[in-house]
Image (cartoon, rainbow, N blue to C red):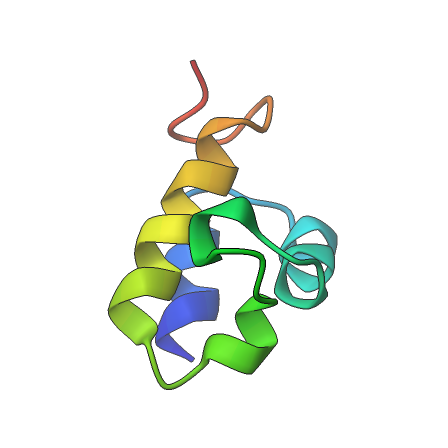
Length: 61
C-alpha cells in the first residue's frame, strides 16, 4: 500500500502505476517492480524516477 500511496502523492495516474508494476525497469536492473516487492526502498526510488518522466506528475521536469 505504501508504494501505491506514494504513486498517488506523485500524482501518477493509477493506470500508469499498474503498467509500471509489470514492466521491467532499468532502475531495478531489468526486474519488474512486482517481482521486487521485498525491496520497498528501491521501489520507491524507482517510482520517483518513473514519475519524473511523466507529464503532469508532481516531479515532472
